[in-house]
Image (cartoon, rainbow, N blue to C red; front, side, top):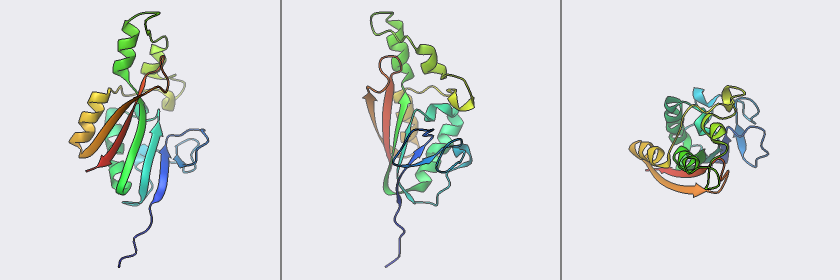
Length: 164
């Protein structure tokens, strides 16, 4: 019988200063201070769950693709990714209805972030359909869910994914 190390329960990517019960990997304020664009500081197959809320859009498309591949590398068998991301399609759809009908009064913040620093600027705009397509092409099983987090001013969606 081989001695397989037990994976860490879960980590948070880009959690900022939020009080979390998970190990937070964040370049500025994390339990582990790491720029995820340089990879994840964990061995292969060592993490059970990877969570992130309002972070993935702060990476360019290429950086997001590289991070998705890193997540796959570090996930243990049966592990999962659970990200919440602004839904740009929904933001524009609601905004275009106009004030009083679901208008996205905070569209600029939803699209660009607050731009106060590099890590507060949105660099990629995702729709659920686009992200599901990309992750499935990379060999993930994907479930999408719209979330009430941030509505109506910043519509979001949740992607949960497992490597195939």
